[in-house]
Amino acid sequence: MIKMSQYNVTPSLINALIDARLGISGPVTVLTDTSNIKDAVTYIATSADTDLSAVTTNHTVLINVAMTAGHDILLPQATTSNGGMHVRVIIGIPQTAAFAIGPASGSLLVGAATFIGDAAAGITTGNPALVQSLLATANKSVALDGNATAKGGDAGTILDFLYTGVADRIVFSGAVTADVENPSGASFFSTSQVAMT
Image (cartoon, rainbow, N blue to C red; front, top):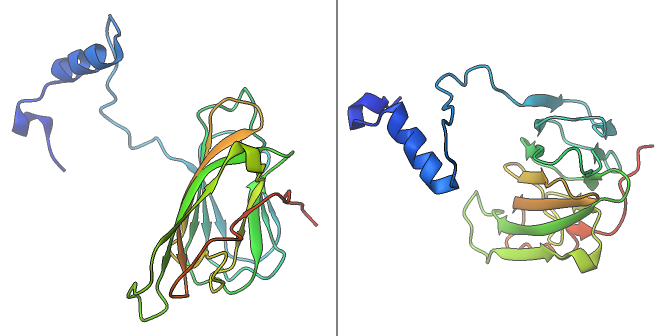
């Protein structure tokens, strides 16, 4: 841990820098103890549909089971009242079946995912891919399958869903691994709504 005193950085200097950067006049509180600030966590250890549509705070989802086909994850709808919420999905173990993750009630995903293949003993020999989801494409979910060239979603995949406070719009960013050499991500974004069975 680096201490502020090692670099002659004082809380008042930090406050002044923040004030100047943000154009704020007056005091800004700098949190010195963040040990009690944690995201809520859902740990998925059994393959089943997971309904997280009622989540209202920052949330981390850790998938630590090989999902079976059709067992999907439903995230909250984007509304004007949940702006600032961040849902992060982390895939902890290899995935070999198709499943989807997406928000409720037709919220659209806007953003991009980067794909890296690693089939040869963790050595990336193929080319990375970048796939975008534009508002006009009306994508409502991401389709995953760790060993599928067109999808990806193997161990180490991290997906970020950022709620901006705009109804039915979520900013998405993904770092997607795949157990293939040249993942394309061509079928990663989907216009299909995630449905719980």
